[in-house]
Structures are given as C-alpha cells and as structure tokens.
Amino acid sequence: MKALEIDVEELQELAESTGDQGHIGALKAKQSALADLLGISAQGALVRSRFRNISEMDASSRFFFGLERKNGQKRLIHSMRSDTGQILSESTDIRRHAVGFYSSLFQSELGEEQEVSHGFYEGLPKVEQESSAELEADVSLDELHTALQSMENGKAPGIDGLPVEFYKTMWSVMGEDLLMVLRDRLTGGQLPLSCRRAVLTLLPKKGDLMEIKNWRPVSLLCTEYKLLSKVLATRLRVVMGQVIHRDQTYCVPDRLVSDNVFLIRDFLDISSALGLGFGLISIDQEKAFDRVEHQYLWKTLEAFGFRSHSQDQGLVQ
Image 1 (cartoon, rainbow, N blue to C red):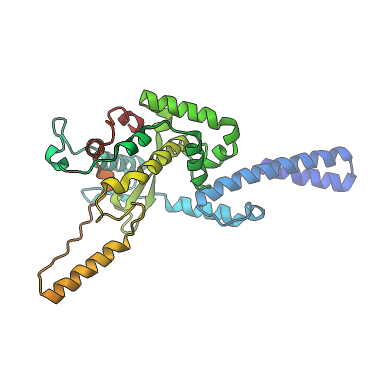
Image 2 (cartoon, one colour):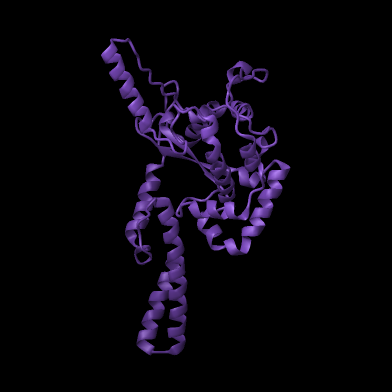
C-alpha cells in the first residue's frame, strides 16, 4: 500500500506539471487500485475492531485502523501466572500453560467404561412423532437461505476466510451447490474436516488477566458449519416446549426468564405469610458450557425421543 501511495503522489505531480494524458491515465489507474486496497483493509479493520455503525465514506479513516490496533493490543498476553505462582513471560511457556489448561478443561471427565446413569432418564417426556419426522427431514434451500439472512454481517470468518457476506453475495450462484454438499454430508454422517476445524482465540474477561481462567476461548467457525447449526437449532426451537419442563424458561420460545423472577418472589411472599422455612440455592458452575459431556448430550436427545444420534456425532467431532 505504501508503494502505491508513493506512485500516486509522483504521478499526480507529473500530471499537474505536464498535463500529459499518459500520466493522467496512469494516475487514475493507481488511484483506483489504492482505493480498492484501502477498502479491503478497512473492511478487515472493521471486523477486527468490532465497530459496526459506520458508513462507507468513513471506512478508511485513521480512527478505525487505530481502533483495530487497540483491540489487538487488548488480546496480547505479555505474561501469565502458572499454577505454582511462577510468572511466565516467554511466549513458549505461556502457550504451553494455555494449551495445558484448556486441554484439561475440554477433556471428558467420564472414564471409558463410565456411562451416564440410565435411571436419570426415566420418566422424561418424548417429542411427538410428527415433530420427530419434521426434524429428520432433508435440509431445504429455503431453510438454508433463511438461516443465512438471519446471520449478522461483520463477523470474523473461520479458517477458510469466507465471511457471511461472501455467501450472501454469492447465494444465487452457489446456494444449490452448498445445499447439495450439506445434504450429502448429512447422509454420510460427517462434515469435512476443513468445515469442522475452528480457529481458537482468547478474549479477556473481568478479573486478573494473569490468570488463564480469566481469558475466554472463542471458536471462529466456518460459515458453512454455522449455517447448518442455525438450521438445526431453528428446528429444535419448535419442539423444545414439548420436552423442556415449564420451570426452565431460558431459550424456550414463548417463555420469559422474568417468569422465574416472579416465581421466586411468590415463594418468598408465601414463605413470609405462612411462616414457612423456604430456602433458595443459586449454583454457578465454573466453565459450565466448556464442561458439557458430549456422551450426555447424545443420550439425553435419545431419551427425549429424538432419533439415535450415533451417526450425527461425526458431524461435530
């Protein structure tokens, strides 16, 4: 980019001093190339800066490139405290510590011979047979397109570098081909490795950033993977009310989290009025989502009446 800027300055001086049409034509070509390059760089900076409310005419300003650098600096880990209290400052030591921490965190806590107790699943409600058939139906082009249109622009892409905007722009060209590929992979029970791979990045949370637990791992997944996940999640939302107990209100359509707040208030009022000894327990599991057992998920889906997911496990592993 720097070389292009120098070329533009030199050609501009020549064009103004000589009026030569050849210099003027070359200047316009260089200016166009520089504008394209600035646009590409600005879009990348916008994604990395997490800044959204911006018009195209402001995109290439120094402010946004500075914001990108500022956010990048926030993600830098200069030093870290080990489990023994030792300060790690070498990049190799920091990486080794981070890999060890998250490898242990993501590792299954169930032994090879251990299984989730079958008694835990007794008496669970089942998804209706008609709904189950709809869940198992082939992915349609309309479903895929609706899922794509609902996804936000400006998100960091996965390992293939193709963002949501690419698929939206090229949908008329590649939509049916993408559908064919996903259907084929769903039938075969496994997405390609390139689609299942993710780029992991660490984002700072609150607290002491010398502690690795205060860095949140984020997986940058390929858009194809997120598209398929969106389709399946949309299907599941329709039937969640059939199998999820009414006391669980989060993420279930037509239920409000505030309902549980009112329920707690009613319990407290009744306890006070009748002199009853009620108690409330609030449990917050550390790294709860990171500790979810896949084996537990598959068996829970089967217990709720979804078809066997022994094949579908290959889609995500």
